[in-house]
Image (cartoon, rainbow, N blue to C red; front, side):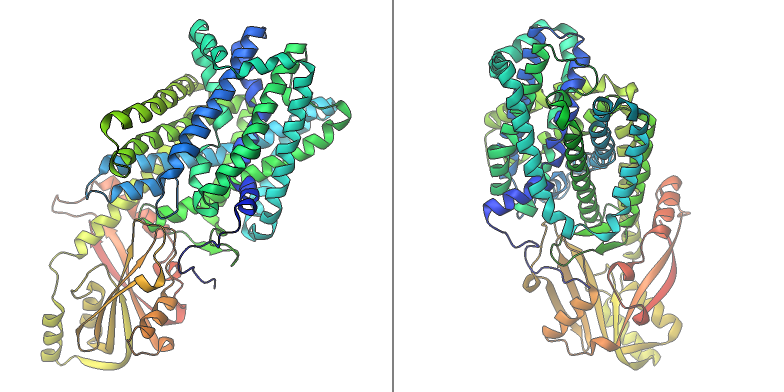
Length: 625
Protein backbone atom coordinates (compact mmCIF):
# COMPACT_ATOMS: atom_id res chain seq x y z
CA UNK A 1 0.00 0.00 0.00
CA UNK A 2 1.50 3.35 -1.01
CA UNK A 3 1.68 6.08 1.52
CA UNK A 4 -0.11 9.27 0.63
CA UNK A 5 1.98 12.43 0.88
CA UNK A 6 1.55 14.62 3.92
CA UNK A 7 1.93 17.87 2.03
CA UNK A 8 2.83 18.02 -1.66
CA UNK A 9 3.03 14.79 -3.61
CA UNK A 10 6.24 15.78 -5.34
CA UNK A 11 9.64 16.66 -3.96
CA UNK A 12 10.53 19.49 -6.28
CA UNK A 13 13.85 18.91 -8.06
CA UNK A 14 15.99 21.71 -9.46
CA UNK A 15 14.42 23.94 -12.09
CA UNK A 16 16.62 22.48 -14.83
CA UNK A 17 15.94 18.85 -13.92
CA UNK A 18 12.22 19.53 -13.58
CA UNK A 19 12.27 21.35 -16.91
CA UNK A 20 13.74 18.29 -18.65
CA UNK A 21 11.11 16.12 -16.97
CA UNK A 22 8.39 18.49 -18.14
CA UNK A 23 9.45 17.92 -21.74
CA UNK A 24 8.17 14.36 -21.58
CA UNK A 25 4.91 15.05 -19.77
CA UNK A 26 3.80 18.59 -20.51
CA UNK A 27 4.96 19.19 -24.08
CA UNK A 28 4.38 15.84 -25.79
CA UNK A 29 1.09 16.95 -27.37
CA UNK A 30 2.12 20.40 -28.59
CA UNK A 31 5.57 19.06 -29.49
CA UNK A 32 4.25 16.59 -32.04
CA UNK A 33 1.83 19.00 -33.71
CA UNK A 34 4.32 19.94 -36.52
CA UNK A 35 3.77 16.41 -37.85
CA UNK A 36 0.33 17.34 -39.14
CA UNK A 37 -0.48 21.03 -38.56
CA UNK A 38 1.23 22.76 -41.51
CA UNK A 39 0.09 20.08 -43.95
CA UNK A 40 -3.51 20.40 -42.69
CA UNK A 41 -3.48 24.20 -42.98
CA UNK A 42 -1.97 24.12 -46.44
CA UNK A 43 -4.68 21.73 -47.64
CA UNK A 44 -7.32 24.11 -46.27
CA UNK A 45 -5.87 27.13 -48.12
CA UNK A 46 -5.91 25.41 -51.50
CA UNK A 47 -2.99 27.64 -52.52
CA UNK A 48 0.81 27.35 -52.38
CA UNK A 49 1.58 30.96 -53.31
CA UNK A 50 4.26 32.89 -51.43
CA UNK A 51 1.60 35.18 -49.94
CA UNK A 52 -0.28 32.19 -48.56
CA UNK A 53 2.84 30.51 -47.15
CA UNK A 54 3.99 33.71 -45.43
CA UNK A 55 0.52 34.29 -44.00
CA UNK A 56 0.17 30.73 -42.71
CA UNK A 57 3.61 30.63 -41.05
CA UNK A 58 2.97 34.03 -39.47
CA UNK A 59 -0.39 32.81 -38.15
CA UNK A 60 1.22 29.69 -36.65
CA UNK A 61 3.99 31.66 -34.93
CA UNK A 62 1.73 34.34 -33.49
CA UNK A 63 -0.85 31.81 -32.38
CA UNK A 64 1.91 30.11 -30.37
CA UNK A 65 2.90 33.48 -28.91
CA UNK A 66 -0.58 34.76 -28.00
CA UNK A 67 -2.18 31.52 -26.80
CA UNK A 68 0.69 29.61 -25.25
CA UNK A 69 3.29 32.20 -24.26
CA UNK A 70 1.01 35.07 -23.24
CA UNK A 71 -2.26 33.42 -22.14
CA UNK A 72 -1.03 30.25 -20.46
CA UNK A 73 2.61 30.90 -19.50
CA UNK A 74 2.07 34.60 -18.82
CA UNK A 75 -1.36 34.70 -17.15
CA UNK A 76 -3.02 31.34 -16.42
CA UNK A 77 0.02 29.86 -14.68
CA UNK A 78 -0.01 32.76 -12.20
CA UNK A 79 -3.35 31.50 -10.85
CA UNK A 80 -2.96 28.25 -8.95
CA UNK A 81 -4.95 26.28 -6.40
CA UNK A 82 -2.32 25.48 -3.79
CA UNK A 83 0.18 24.85 -6.58
CA UNK A 84 -2.22 22.89 -8.81
CA UNK A 85 -3.51 24.09 -12.16
CA UNK A 86 -6.00 22.98 -14.78
CA UNK A 87 -9.65 23.73 -15.36
CA UNK A 88 -10.95 21.54 -12.49
CA UNK A 89 -8.51 23.06 -10.00
CA UNK A 90 -9.49 26.54 -11.19
CA UNK A 91 -13.18 25.64 -10.93
CA UNK A 92 -12.68 24.40 -7.37
CA UNK A 93 -10.76 27.55 -6.44
CA UNK A 94 -13.42 29.92 -7.81
CA UNK A 95 -16.32 27.77 -6.67
CA UNK A 96 -15.60 28.40 -2.98
CA UNK A 97 -15.58 32.16 -3.31
CA UNK A 98 -19.36 32.03 -3.06
CA UNK A 99 -21.65 29.25 -1.97
CA UNK A 100 -23.72 28.93 -5.14
CA UNK A 101 -21.94 29.25 -8.46
CA UNK A 102 -23.65 26.81 -10.82
CA UNK A 103 -22.42 28.59 -13.95
CA UNK A 104 -18.77 28.25 -12.91
CA UNK A 105 -19.30 24.59 -12.03
CA UNK A 106 -21.02 23.90 -15.36
CA UNK A 107 -18.24 25.60 -17.35
CA UNK A 108 -15.50 23.82 -15.43
CA UNK A 109 -17.10 20.41 -15.68
CA UNK A 110 -17.86 20.60 -19.40
CA UNK A 111 -14.33 21.84 -20.05
CA UNK A 112 -13.03 18.86 -18.10
CA UNK A 113 -15.34 16.53 -19.99
CA UNK A 114 -13.94 17.81 -23.29
CA UNK A 115 -10.46 16.80 -22.16
CA UNK A 116 -11.57 13.17 -22.26
CA UNK A 117 -12.34 13.71 -25.95
CA UNK A 118 -8.86 15.14 -26.36
CA UNK A 119 -7.50 12.08 -24.56
CA UNK A 120 -9.11 9.78 -27.11
CA UNK A 121 -8.18 11.79 -30.21
CA UNK A 122 -4.55 12.68 -29.34
CA UNK A 123 -3.15 9.13 -29.53
CA UNK A 124 -5.04 8.42 -32.75
CA UNK A 125 -4.01 11.54 -34.68
CA UNK A 126 -0.43 11.57 -33.32
CA UNK A 127 0.47 7.94 -34.07
CA UNK A 128 -1.28 8.09 -37.46
CA UNK A 129 0.64 11.23 -38.47
CA UNK A 130 3.98 9.71 -37.43
CA UNK A 131 3.48 6.45 -39.31
CA UNK A 132 2.23 8.23 -42.42
CA UNK A 133 5.90 9.01 -43.02
CA UNK A 134 6.17 5.43 -44.24
CA UNK A 135 4.30 6.58 -47.34
CA UNK A 136 7.45 8.57 -48.19
CA UNK A 137 10.18 6.27 -46.90
CA UNK A 138 8.66 3.04 -48.20
CA UNK A 139 5.50 3.53 -50.32
CA UNK A 140 4.99 -0.23 -50.50
CA UNK A 141 4.19 -0.18 -46.77
CA UNK A 142 1.27 2.23 -47.17
CA UNK A 143 -1.41 -0.48 -46.73
CA UNK A 144 0.11 -1.35 -43.37
CA UNK A 145 0.01 2.15 -41.84
CA UNK A 146 -3.49 1.77 -40.39
CA UNK A 147 -3.03 -1.77 -39.01
CA UNK A 148 0.32 -0.79 -37.50
CA UNK A 149 -1.33 2.25 -35.90
CA UNK A 150 -3.96 0.01 -34.30
CA UNK A 151 -1.27 -2.39 -33.02
CA UNK A 152 0.79 0.44 -31.47
CA UNK A 153 -2.28 1.96 -29.82
CA UNK A 154 -3.35 -1.44 -28.49
CA UNK A 155 0.13 -1.99 -27.06
CA UNK A 156 0.19 1.49 -25.52
CA UNK A 157 -3.02 0.98 -23.58
CA UNK A 158 -2.19 -2.64 -22.72
CA UNK A 159 1.00 -1.48 -20.98
CA UNK A 160 -0.79 1.06 -18.76
CA UNK A 161 -1.42 -1.36 -15.84
CA UNK A 162 2.35 -1.71 -15.44
CA UNK A 163 2.74 1.97 -14.58
CA UNK A 164 5.12 4.49 -16.12
CA UNK A 165 7.56 5.24 -13.31
CA UNK A 166 10.61 3.63 -14.95
CA UNK A 167 9.70 4.57 -18.51
CA UNK A 168 8.95 8.12 -17.37
CA UNK A 169 12.60 8.78 -16.55
CA UNK A 170 13.46 8.42 -20.22
CA UNK A 171 10.60 10.55 -21.51
CA UNK A 172 12.27 13.92 -20.89
CA UNK A 173 15.62 13.17 -22.57
CA UNK A 174 13.90 11.53 -25.56
CA UNK A 175 11.66 14.54 -26.06
CA UNK A 176 14.70 16.82 -25.72
CA UNK A 177 16.26 14.90 -28.63
CA UNK A 178 12.98 15.23 -30.54
CA UNK A 179 12.82 19.02 -30.08
CA UNK A 180 16.49 19.46 -31.02
CA UNK A 181 15.92 17.30 -34.10
CA UNK A 182 12.93 19.46 -35.10
CA UNK A 183 15.02 22.59 -34.63
CA UNK A 184 17.89 21.25 -36.76
CA UNK A 185 15.49 20.15 -39.50
CA UNK A 186 13.87 23.57 -39.39
CA UNK A 187 17.20 25.36 -39.72
CA UNK A 188 18.07 23.08 -42.66
CA UNK A 189 14.87 24.14 -44.37
CA UNK A 190 15.36 27.84 -43.58
CA UNK A 191 18.87 27.79 -45.06
CA UNK A 192 17.35 26.68 -48.34
CA UNK A 193 15.01 29.71 -48.40
CA UNK A 194 16.00 32.30 -45.70
CA UNK A 195 13.34 34.73 -46.82
CA UNK A 196 10.76 32.73 -44.85
CA UNK A 197 11.97 34.51 -41.72
CA UNK A 198 10.02 37.59 -42.83
CA UNK A 199 6.93 35.61 -41.86
CA UNK A 200 7.77 36.29 -38.21
CA UNK A 201 6.32 39.75 -38.82
CA UNK A 202 2.66 39.75 -37.62
CA UNK A 203 1.78 41.92 -40.61
CA UNK A 204 1.64 38.83 -42.82
CA UNK A 205 -0.79 37.08 -40.48
CA UNK A 206 -3.10 40.10 -40.33
CA UNK A 207 -2.86 40.69 -44.07
CA UNK A 208 -3.82 37.08 -44.80
CA UNK A 209 -6.84 37.26 -42.48
CA UNK A 210 -8.00 40.61 -43.88
CA UNK A 211 -7.61 39.75 -47.57
CA UNK A 212 -8.30 36.02 -47.40
CA UNK A 213 -12.06 36.34 -46.99
CA UNK A 214 -14.11 33.44 -45.69
CA UNK A 215 -11.37 31.02 -46.70
CA UNK A 216 -8.98 32.60 -44.19
CA UNK A 217 -11.56 32.10 -41.45
CA UNK A 218 -11.80 28.38 -42.24
CA UNK A 219 -7.99 28.14 -42.20
CA UNK A 220 -7.99 29.21 -38.54
CA UNK A 221 -9.36 25.79 -37.62
CA UNK A 222 -6.20 24.19 -38.98
CA UNK A 223 -3.90 26.84 -37.53
CA UNK A 224 -5.29 26.09 -34.08
CA UNK A 225 -3.77 22.61 -34.19
CA UNK A 226 -0.37 24.16 -33.39
CA UNK A 227 -1.51 24.91 -29.81
CA UNK A 228 -3.57 21.81 -29.04
CA UNK A 229 -1.28 20.92 -26.12
CA UNK A 230 -1.14 24.39 -24.57
CA UNK A 231 -3.71 23.53 -21.88
CA UNK A 232 -1.21 20.97 -20.51
CA UNK A 233 1.13 23.77 -19.41
CA UNK A 234 -1.51 24.83 -16.92
CA UNK A 235 -2.94 21.41 -16.08
CA UNK A 236 0.45 19.84 -15.21
CA UNK A 237 1.71 22.81 -13.21
CA UNK A 238 1.37 20.93 -9.92
CA UNK A 239 3.74 18.19 -11.08
CA UNK A 240 6.70 20.37 -12.03
CA UNK A 241 6.01 23.93 -10.92
CA UNK A 242 5.47 27.00 -13.09
CA UNK A 243 9.18 27.91 -13.29
CA UNK A 244 10.47 24.70 -14.92
CA UNK A 245 7.57 24.58 -17.39
CA UNK A 246 8.15 28.18 -18.47
CA UNK A 247 11.91 27.52 -18.76
CA UNK A 248 11.40 24.47 -20.96
CA UNK A 249 8.90 26.34 -23.12
CA UNK A 250 10.96 29.47 -23.69
CA UNK A 251 14.40 27.85 -23.94
CA UNK A 252 13.67 24.82 -26.13
CA UNK A 253 10.08 24.02 -27.08
CA UNK A 254 8.94 27.36 -28.51
CA UNK A 255 12.14 28.01 -30.54
CA UNK A 256 12.06 24.44 -31.91
CA UNK A 257 8.44 24.76 -33.00
CA UNK A 258 8.99 28.13 -34.67
CA UNK A 259 12.11 26.90 -36.50
CA UNK A 260 10.37 23.75 -37.71
CA UNK A 261 7.25 25.50 -38.97
CA UNK A 262 9.44 28.09 -40.71
CA UNK A 263 11.54 25.30 -42.23
CA UNK A 264 8.44 23.54 -43.59
CA UNK A 265 7.28 26.80 -45.11
CA UNK A 266 10.71 27.41 -46.61
CA UNK A 267 10.91 24.10 -48.48
CA UNK A 268 7.41 24.57 -49.88
CA UNK A 269 8.45 28.00 -51.15
CA UNK A 270 11.49 26.34 -52.71
CA UNK A 271 9.25 23.89 -54.53
CA UNK A 272 9.19 20.77 -52.32
CA UNK A 273 6.23 18.43 -52.98
CA UNK A 274 3.22 18.89 -50.71
CA UNK A 275 1.79 15.43 -51.20
CA UNK A 276 2.04 13.24 -48.13
CA UNK A 277 3.55 14.55 -44.91
CA UNK A 278 5.50 17.79 -45.49
CA UNK A 279 7.34 17.36 -42.18
CA UNK A 280 9.32 14.41 -43.52
CA UNK A 281 10.39 16.32 -46.65
CA UNK A 282 12.65 18.37 -44.35
CA UNK A 283 14.75 15.28 -43.80
CA UNK A 284 17.36 13.82 -46.17
CA UNK A 285 15.90 10.62 -47.71
CA UNK A 286 18.57 8.42 -46.10
CA UNK A 287 17.47 9.56 -42.62
CA UNK A 288 13.72 9.41 -43.14
CA UNK A 289 13.27 5.99 -41.55
CA UNK A 290 15.17 6.87 -38.33
CA UNK A 291 13.12 10.09 -38.15
CA UNK A 292 9.89 8.09 -38.50
CA UNK A 293 11.00 5.87 -35.60
CA UNK A 294 11.86 8.91 -33.45
CA UNK A 295 8.56 10.59 -34.38
CA UNK A 296 6.61 7.45 -33.49
CA UNK A 297 8.30 7.30 -30.09
CA UNK A 298 7.52 11.01 -29.55
CA UNK A 299 3.86 10.47 -30.40
CA UNK A 300 3.68 7.50 -28.03
CA UNK A 301 5.11 9.72 -25.29
CA UNK A 302 2.58 12.43 -26.16
CA UNK A 303 -0.20 9.84 -26.00
CA UNK A 304 1.09 8.49 -22.69
CA UNK A 305 1.05 11.98 -21.23
CA UNK A 306 -2.58 12.62 -22.18
CA UNK A 307 -3.65 9.20 -20.86
CA UNK A 308 -1.92 9.86 -17.53
CA UNK A 309 -3.60 13.25 -17.44
CA UNK A 310 -7.00 11.60 -17.92
CA UNK A 311 -6.25 9.31 -14.97
CA UNK A 312 -5.33 12.27 -12.75
CA UNK A 313 -8.39 14.26 -13.76
CA UNK A 314 -10.61 11.26 -13.05
CA UNK A 315 -9.25 11.09 -9.51
CA UNK A 316 -9.91 14.80 -9.05
CA UNK A 317 -13.49 14.43 -10.29
CA UNK A 318 -14.12 11.43 -8.00
CA UNK A 319 -12.76 13.27 -5.00
CA UNK A 320 -14.88 16.34 -5.76
CA UNK A 321 -17.97 14.11 -5.95
CA UNK A 322 -18.58 14.48 -9.67
CA UNK A 323 -17.83 10.96 -10.88
CA UNK A 324 -18.62 7.44 -9.66
CA UNK A 325 -15.96 5.73 -7.57
CA UNK A 326 -13.55 3.78 -9.78
CA UNK A 327 -10.77 1.45 -8.75
CA UNK A 328 -7.59 3.51 -8.64
CA UNK A 329 -4.29 1.73 -8.26
CA UNK A 330 -1.05 3.43 -7.27
CA UNK A 331 1.59 2.02 -9.62
CA UNK A 332 4.64 3.54 -7.95
CA UNK A 333 5.66 5.08 -4.66
CA UNK A 334 7.99 7.45 -6.51
CA UNK A 335 5.26 9.88 -7.51
CA UNK A 336 1.70 10.41 -6.33
CA UNK A 337 0.65 11.02 -9.93
CA UNK A 338 1.67 7.49 -10.92
CA UNK A 339 -1.77 5.89 -10.91
CA UNK A 340 -3.79 3.55 -13.07
CA UNK A 341 -7.57 3.70 -13.58
CA UNK A 342 -8.61 0.57 -15.42
CA UNK A 343 -12.11 1.65 -16.45
CA UNK A 344 -10.86 4.88 -18.02
CA UNK A 345 -7.95 3.12 -19.72
CA UNK A 346 -10.00 0.47 -21.52
CA UNK A 347 -12.77 2.86 -22.57
CA UNK A 348 -10.17 5.28 -23.97
CA UNK A 349 -8.51 2.39 -25.80
CA UNK A 350 -11.73 1.33 -27.52
CA UNK A 351 -12.62 4.89 -28.51
CA UNK A 352 -9.08 5.74 -29.69
CA UNK A 353 -8.64 2.65 -31.86
CA UNK A 354 -12.18 3.09 -33.16
CA UNK A 355 -11.39 6.69 -34.18
CA UNK A 356 -8.18 5.66 -35.93
CA UNK A 357 -9.95 2.92 -37.90
CA UNK A 358 -12.96 5.10 -38.72
CA UNK A 359 -11.10 8.24 -39.85
CA UNK A 360 -8.11 6.36 -41.37
CA UNK A 361 -5.92 9.48 -41.89
CA UNK A 362 -4.60 12.15 -39.55
CA UNK A 363 -6.01 14.89 -41.84
CA UNK A 364 -9.52 13.51 -41.33
CA UNK A 365 -9.16 13.73 -37.54
CA UNK A 366 -7.97 17.36 -37.56
CA UNK A 367 -11.46 18.87 -37.39
CA UNK A 368 -12.52 16.69 -34.49
CA UNK A 369 -9.32 17.48 -32.63
CA UNK A 370 -9.62 21.25 -32.84
CA UNK A 371 -13.16 21.51 -31.49
CA UNK A 372 -12.35 19.67 -28.26
CA UNK A 373 -9.34 21.78 -27.34
CA UNK A 374 -10.63 25.16 -28.53
CA UNK A 375 -13.83 24.72 -26.51
CA UNK A 376 -11.81 23.89 -23.38
CA UNK A 377 -9.61 26.95 -23.91
CA UNK A 378 -12.66 29.15 -24.38
CA UNK A 379 -14.05 27.98 -21.04
CA UNK A 380 -10.69 28.46 -19.33
CA UNK A 381 -10.69 32.06 -20.55
CA UNK A 382 -14.08 32.65 -18.93
CA UNK A 383 -12.79 31.33 -15.60
CA UNK A 384 -9.60 33.41 -15.95
CA UNK A 385 -11.71 36.57 -16.26
CA UNK A 386 -13.43 35.77 -12.96
CA UNK A 387 -10.06 35.00 -11.36
CA UNK A 388 -8.67 38.36 -12.51
CA UNK A 389 -11.57 40.12 -10.84
CA UNK A 390 -11.79 38.11 -7.62
CA UNK A 391 -8.26 36.82 -6.95
CA UNK A 392 -6.08 39.52 -8.46
CA UNK A 393 -8.66 42.25 -7.68
CA UNK A 394 -8.27 43.85 -11.10
CA UNK A 395 -10.81 46.46 -12.10
CA UNK A 396 -13.42 45.63 -14.71
CA UNK A 397 -11.71 47.53 -17.52
CA UNK A 398 -8.33 45.80 -17.12
CA UNK A 399 -9.90 42.36 -16.71
CA UNK A 400 -12.17 42.82 -19.72
CA UNK A 401 -9.30 44.11 -21.87
CA UNK A 402 -6.97 41.17 -21.20
CA UNK A 403 -9.57 38.40 -21.01
CA UNK A 404 -11.42 40.00 -23.93
CA UNK A 405 -8.34 39.63 -26.16
CA UNK A 406 -8.05 35.96 -25.22
CA UNK A 407 -11.78 35.48 -25.70
CA UNK A 408 -11.73 36.97 -29.21
CA UNK A 409 -8.83 34.71 -30.21
CA UNK A 410 -10.34 31.58 -28.63
CA UNK A 411 -13.80 32.32 -30.03
CA UNK A 412 -12.37 32.78 -33.53
CA UNK A 413 -10.61 29.43 -33.35
CA UNK A 414 -13.64 27.69 -31.87
CA UNK A 415 -16.01 29.15 -34.48
CA UNK A 416 -13.68 28.11 -37.28
CA UNK A 417 -13.40 24.59 -35.91
CA UNK A 418 -17.18 24.36 -35.59
CA UNK A 419 -17.40 24.63 -39.37
CA UNK A 420 -16.13 21.03 -39.38
CA UNK A 421 -18.82 19.84 -37.00
CA UNK A 422 -20.23 17.33 -39.49
CA UNK A 423 -16.77 16.24 -40.67
CA UNK A 424 -15.83 14.64 -37.36
CA UNK A 425 -16.16 17.61 -35.04
CA UNK A 426 -19.21 16.03 -33.43
CA UNK A 427 -17.05 13.23 -31.98
CA UNK A 428 -15.45 15.13 -29.05
CA UNK A 429 -18.68 16.99 -28.35
CA UNK A 430 -20.56 13.71 -28.19
CA UNK A 431 -17.92 12.17 -25.90
CA UNK A 432 -17.95 15.27 -23.69
CA UNK A 433 -21.74 15.26 -23.50
CA UNK A 434 -21.70 11.65 -22.32
CA UNK A 435 -19.06 12.35 -19.67
CA UNK A 436 -20.88 15.49 -18.54
CA UNK A 437 -24.15 13.54 -18.26
CA UNK A 438 -22.46 10.99 -15.99
CA UNK A 439 -20.99 13.79 -13.85
CA UNK A 440 -24.34 15.58 -13.61
CA UNK A 441 -26.38 12.48 -12.73
CA UNK A 442 -23.85 11.18 -10.21
CA UNK A 443 -23.65 14.50 -8.36
CA UNK A 444 -27.43 14.92 -8.37
CA UNK A 445 -27.92 11.39 -7.06
CA UNK A 446 -25.29 11.61 -4.33
CA UNK A 447 -26.72 14.91 -3.16
CA UNK A 448 -30.28 13.52 -3.17
CA UNK A 449 -29.21 10.46 -1.14
CA UNK A 450 -27.44 12.68 1.40
CA UNK A 451 -30.50 14.92 1.75
CA UNK A 452 -32.81 11.93 2.09
CA UNK A 453 -30.71 10.29 4.77
CA UNK A 454 -30.38 13.61 6.55
CA UNK A 455 -34.12 13.99 7.03
CA UNK A 456 -35.34 13.76 10.62
CA UNK A 457 -31.91 13.69 12.30
CA UNK A 458 -31.70 11.99 15.71
CA UNK A 459 -29.56 13.75 18.36
CA UNK A 460 -26.93 11.41 19.71
CA UNK A 461 -27.82 12.05 23.38
CA UNK A 462 -31.46 11.15 22.71
CA UNK A 463 -30.51 8.00 20.86
CA UNK A 464 -28.09 6.80 23.55
CA UNK A 465 -30.67 7.49 26.25
CA UNK A 466 -33.29 5.50 24.33
CA UNK A 467 -30.79 2.66 23.98
CA UNK A 468 -30.17 2.59 27.70
CA UNK A 469 -33.91 2.60 28.45
CA UNK A 470 -34.48 -0.24 25.97
CA UNK A 471 -31.74 -2.35 27.53
CA UNK A 472 -29.59 -2.48 24.40
CA UNK A 473 -26.40 -4.26 25.33
CA UNK A 474 -22.92 -2.91 24.60
CA UNK A 475 -20.40 -5.40 23.29
CA UNK A 476 -16.59 -5.20 23.42
CA UNK A 477 -14.78 -3.54 20.53
CA UNK A 478 -14.86 -0.40 18.42
CA UNK A 479 -17.35 0.32 15.63
CA UNK A 480 -16.57 2.79 12.85
CA UNK A 481 -19.63 4.18 11.08
CA UNK A 482 -19.04 6.09 7.86
CA UNK A 483 -21.66 8.82 7.76
CA UNK A 484 -22.53 12.11 6.12
CA UNK A 485 -24.29 13.25 9.30
CA UNK A 486 -22.40 15.55 11.65
CA UNK A 487 -23.01 15.69 15.39
CA UNK A 488 -26.11 13.48 14.98
CA UNK A 489 -26.66 9.75 15.02
CA UNK A 490 -25.41 8.00 11.85
CA UNK A 491 -28.38 6.43 9.99
CA UNK A 492 -26.39 3.21 9.48
CA UNK A 493 -25.94 2.95 13.25
CA UNK A 494 -29.66 3.40 13.87
CA UNK A 495 -30.49 0.56 11.48
CA UNK A 496 -27.75 -1.66 12.91
CA UNK A 497 -28.98 -1.24 16.49
CA UNK A 498 -32.60 -1.72 15.42
CA UNK A 499 -31.86 -5.09 13.86
CA UNK A 500 -29.15 -6.48 16.18
CA UNK A 501 -30.19 -4.91 19.51
CA UNK A 502 -26.51 -4.36 20.33
CA UNK A 503 -23.76 -1.77 19.90
CA UNK A 504 -20.03 -1.75 20.44
CA UNK A 505 -18.76 -0.11 23.60
CA UNK A 506 -16.76 2.43 21.59
CA UNK A 507 -18.14 4.21 18.50
CA UNK A 508 -16.47 6.43 15.91
CA UNK A 509 -18.78 8.36 13.55
CA UNK A 510 -16.45 9.32 10.68
CA UNK A 511 -17.26 11.89 8.00
CA UNK A 512 -14.91 12.30 5.05
CA UNK A 513 -14.69 15.80 3.60
CA UNK A 514 -13.10 16.85 0.31
CA UNK A 515 -11.70 20.38 0.32
CA UNK A 516 -11.48 22.70 -2.67
CA UNK A 517 -7.69 22.68 -2.34
CA UNK A 518 -5.52 19.88 -3.78
CA UNK A 519 -3.83 18.77 -0.56
CA UNK A 520 -4.52 18.81 3.15
CA UNK A 521 -1.49 18.06 5.31
CA UNK A 522 -1.92 15.35 7.94
CA UNK A 523 -1.69 17.74 10.90
CA UNK A 524 -4.68 19.73 9.60
CA UNK A 525 -6.79 16.71 8.66
CA UNK A 526 -8.71 15.76 11.79
CA UNK A 527 -11.49 17.40 13.74
CA UNK A 528 -12.46 15.24 16.73
CA UNK A 529 -15.14 15.71 19.37
CA UNK A 530 -16.34 13.28 22.03
CA UNK A 531 -20.09 13.94 21.94
CA UNK A 532 -20.82 11.33 24.62
CA UNK A 533 -18.72 8.90 26.65
CA UNK A 534 -16.89 6.68 24.13
CA UNK A 535 -18.78 8.21 21.20
CA UNK A 536 -16.52 10.24 18.92
CA UNK A 537 -17.59 12.45 16.02
CA UNK A 538 -14.66 12.72 13.62
CA UNK A 539 -14.32 14.74 10.43
CA UNK A 540 -11.35 13.98 8.18
CA UNK A 541 -10.54 16.46 5.41
CA UNK A 542 -8.70 15.55 2.21
CA UNK A 543 -7.66 17.57 -0.82
CA UNK A 544 -9.18 16.75 -4.17
CA UNK A 545 -5.84 15.31 -5.34
CA UNK A 546 -5.65 12.90 -2.40
CA UNK A 547 -7.17 9.46 -2.00
CA UNK A 548 -8.45 8.68 1.53
CA UNK A 549 -6.91 5.68 3.26
CA UNK A 550 -9.14 4.65 6.17
CA UNK A 551 -6.66 2.36 8.01
CA UNK A 552 -4.04 5.11 7.94
CA UNK A 553 -6.67 7.54 9.20
CA UNK A 554 -7.46 5.22 12.14
CA UNK A 555 -3.78 5.18 13.11
CA UNK A 556 -3.77 8.96 13.06
CA UNK A 557 -6.90 9.04 15.24
CA UNK A 558 -5.16 6.81 17.80
CA UNK A 559 -2.15 9.12 17.77
CA UNK A 560 -4.52 12.04 18.39
CA UNK A 561 -5.77 10.60 21.70
CA UNK A 562 -8.53 8.10 20.93
CA UNK A 563 -7.44 4.82 22.54
CA UNK A 564 -8.34 1.70 20.52
CA UNK A 565 -6.85 -1.33 18.81
CA UNK A 566 -6.89 -0.63 15.08
CA UNK A 567 -6.67 -4.36 14.30
CA UNK A 568 -9.99 -5.06 16.03
CA UNK A 569 -12.07 -2.36 14.39
CA UNK A 570 -15.37 -3.13 12.64
CA UNK A 571 -16.32 -0.81 9.79
CA UNK A 572 -20.03 -0.32 9.01
CA UNK A 573 -21.22 1.06 5.70
CA UNK A 574 -24.59 1.34 4.00
CA UNK A 575 -25.33 -0.45 0.73
CA UNK A 576 -28.06 1.67 -0.80
CA UNK A 577 -30.69 0.35 -3.16
CA UNK A 578 -32.03 3.36 -5.03
CA UNK A 579 -35.73 3.62 -5.86
CA UNK A 580 -37.87 6.58 -7.01
CA UNK A 581 -39.86 8.58 -4.49
CA UNK A 582 -43.60 8.19 -4.66
CA UNK A 583 -44.59 11.55 -3.19
CA UNK A 584 -43.76 13.59 -6.29
CA UNK A 585 -40.81 15.35 -4.62
CA UNK A 586 -38.03 13.19 -6.02
CA UNK A 587 -35.67 13.41 -8.97
CA UNK A 588 -36.89 12.62 -12.49
CA UNK A 589 -37.15 8.89 -12.99
CA UNK A 590 -34.55 8.79 -15.76
CA UNK A 591 -31.98 10.36 -13.41
CA UNK A 592 -32.90 7.91 -10.64
CA UNK A 593 -32.56 4.95 -13.02
CA UNK A 594 -29.21 6.08 -14.42
CA UNK A 595 -27.84 6.93 -10.98
CA UNK A 596 -28.88 3.52 -9.72
CA UNK A 597 -26.91 1.89 -12.55
CA UNK A 598 -23.85 4.05 -11.84
CA UNK A 599 -24.03 3.28 -8.13
CA UNK A 600 -24.28 -0.47 -8.68
CA UNK A 601 -21.27 -0.44 -10.97
CA UNK A 602 -19.07 1.89 -8.91
CA UNK A 603 -16.32 0.55 -6.69
CA UNK A 604 -17.50 -0.36 -3.19
CA UNK A 605 -16.78 2.46 -0.79
CA UNK A 606 -14.74 0.24 1.55
CA UNK A 607 -12.59 -0.97 -1.37
CA UNK A 608 -12.04 2.62 -2.47
CA UNK A 609 -11.03 3.54 1.08
CA UNK A 610 -8.71 0.50 1.30
CA UNK A 611 -10.51 -1.06 4.28
CA UNK A 612 -9.50 -4.68 5.06
CA UNK A 613 -12.38 -6.90 3.78
CA UNK A 614 -12.45 -8.99 6.96
CA UNK A 615 -13.36 -5.95 9.07
CA UNK A 616 -16.35 -4.70 7.05
CA UNK A 617 -20.08 -5.07 7.68
CA UNK A 618 -22.33 -3.86 4.83
CA UNK A 619 -25.87 -2.95 5.78
CA UNK A 620 -28.39 -3.00 2.96
CA UNK A 621 -30.96 -0.23 2.89
CA UNK A 622 -33.48 1.16 0.44
CA UNK A 623 -33.33 4.88 -0.26
CA UNK A 624 -35.95 6.69 -2.29
CA UNK A 625 -34.81 9.85 -4.05
